Amino acid sequence: MRTVGMPFKGAELPLRPGIPPPLHGAGLLPSSAGPDPENLGPRPVHSKGTMIVKRSLDFLLGFYFLSHIPITLFLDLQVVLPRQLYSVKLRNLLAWYAEEFKDPLIQSTPVWFKSFVFCELLFQLPFFPAATYAFFKGNCKWIRMPAIIYSVHTLTTLIPILSTFLFGDFSKASGFKGVGPESFHERITLMAIYAPYFIVPFILLLFMLKNPYREEKRKKK
Image (tube, rainbow, N blue to C red; front, side, top):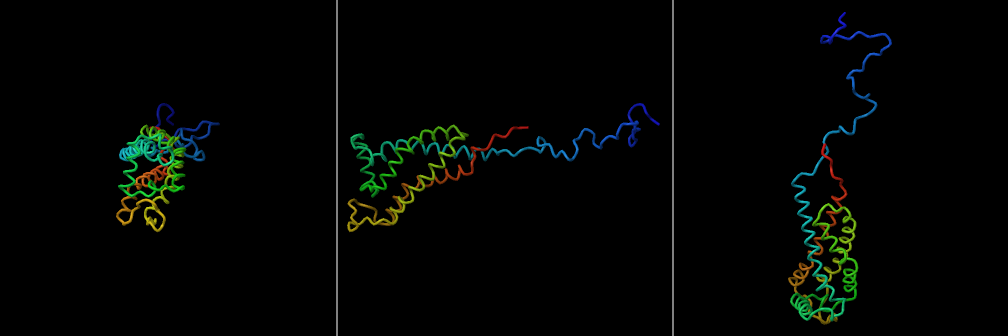
């Protein structure tokens, strides 16, 4: 019997008294231990194309919130703040817009619309700089919940605004004192001006519900 050196292929080592036979596949854990989570294979990673789309959407949202700051400060808030705070040029600009596009909510502002603008002053305006920073920087996980709250609130306010433009009665008989949209084309044009403030928050809501900022960065093995 061969006892010195490596055994021939197919040969078996002799058993010594008191020593159990070796397990097949020496060095492996018993099957009852389960698979090693460290060796489950490569984890999925975002493709380069997906990351480009995500960053492009980040920049779109960043520019949206950045542009919203001067619009809110210099135009929207004229509805609720004293006229003396604004220069004649800014007041004339808002008056020109209201007359040119026949915006009834600016010409004769109802109380419910003022309440929306007041919420824009208290809640949305402080959020705009934070959102601008977060989306330009990217991967700011803390922006997710505030962005969801903002998008839901904005979508909710745009529904009565757009409905007023489309179905509202702005005739003299209705008691409206300004010059509102009459033809279907004028109504659609006015809705198109407000449409970005519905479309972008809707995209933002879907983007945040997909939850890209909660995903942890994958470690490369």
